[in-house]
Image (tube, rainbow over all chains, first blue to last red; front, side, top):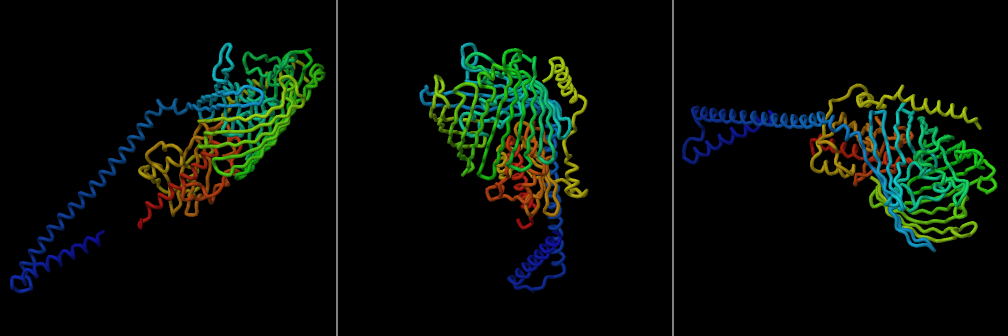
Length: 414
Length: 183
């Protein structure tokens, strides 16, 4: 900077000097200026230097002032943010989210169907860094009430505590740790307009209970869950006799004479891979004695592998029930499995096929089914779905027929 | 299995203990403080913090990477010898995840989760997941130049970390531009 300034000054001296010389030459005078003239030049230049210096100092001061004002303004904004943190903290610590899905179904032999299957809102609140609340409030089939087809449900409402970095406990109403979809079922996360049938008929997803749970995880990707909860209250008579899905009490004044116990072991130590197994023990699957259905145990295992564009999901689940009536009905073993390979040729498009085999309590719940379809994600949180299904029922009867169907759906989460 | 009174006793006691123990001991968080992270990165010689202002193209690109505007008008970072450290936050499903990132001339040097508050997706905290990030660079479209395999059930947490990796790499490029006397 200083060097540049001196260089400029020297140039100015030469310029002014040369102007004097040229002016003298033009006037026919002697080319060399006198001492007085030189003194005048120096004084003039000194005045200019002083003026430039002053101007430079003022500019620097103005720049410093501007920086100081800008910094002060930013600090003030940040301080205002901090001061209003008390007001904003409740908002900051309270979260809202949700998801929903609209389905169109065209099933052979049935009326076409358009249904807002689910609209769900999440509400969460963080009391402290280690104590939080989470809830899921759901409306199914758009309208709920007497004579309506829909339901209003609270599927989750629990308080969770971090006991250690890798150990948590929770109490309240929560989703049981079983299967692939029961805990994670936002429509953008799975293929197919409807959820797979194994995780509807054998694992009665969405399956929630009230109780307490512990879960922990290790650095190597192994995690475990233990839960003590309310249990199933399955019917033993009627069209839905021994149907697991009809046994969900949904924590609505649930009979809790006999509790249920769930344990899960999961491995996710390799990115893209999940291996898990769950055992759920129902100490009395009807909540009452001497009705021909006593204990029940669910065994479930699944694998998920996603690497690049390729994906694979496979799940097996089986119920073993104990009791004279359930054995006599041939419903003491209910099981199902599916395999679902998928391929995502582009980031926004995924293709899949799924084969399912089921043996549930009702005739219409005993079938095998092929399904193919596609998901299109215009945004990571929005999905358009289409699929085609072909179901082959084991024994055709009234209400249990083979059918082909195609489905369309739109889903979203936020 | 159990007689009914015994079962009731055992289950009630177990449930009570499960619910009681959180009141007795709750964990401290985060897993690592920002200061400890910086001390580790710069080996106890942490440079003075600098800021990058979110204005113009930087602001627009930051919002494009995150999918929303960054909540602030400047982002603090620590830099030395073309190596920068960032402590950034992004919401996974419902809660913010605090992440420490180090970028050098060769790309992302490390990514570490400093605080994780979500109920699910804990896997993203651990090296078996975060080890996929070192060496990652940005493509011309501000995407990561390699595939990051996800975690089932933790899609949103994984997405949040990928966004922060992209953001740190992009901001590092901007700091280099600012520091470059020829630019």
